Length: 117
Image 1: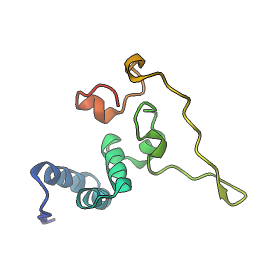
Image 2: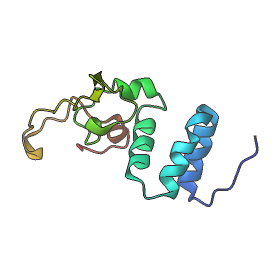
Image 3: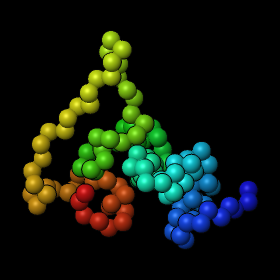
Image 4: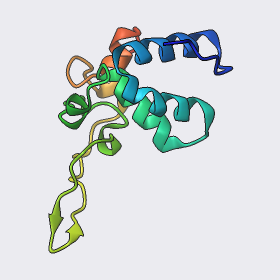
């Protein structure tokens, strides 16, 4: 497969090359996130990167401390009488300074050495 030049910076080019090698069907999600101002595209790409391009892992994500957890992609819509039910609300959490960050971390933040959401 020939390498296409997309005009992105080196980091994004490397990411696209890695996605092309690992899961070519996901390349479009990253190209869309990099080339538009779409928040949905950015969220989709972030979650794909965080869960190693595994859509089933995104659906079953347990990183409830991640700011994108409630709006992560690839969730099954639940229908009741032809209506989509509202998503379960996450219970209120203590202020950031009081949070314990040892569980529920977003793996993307942990692997990059970031603390908390």
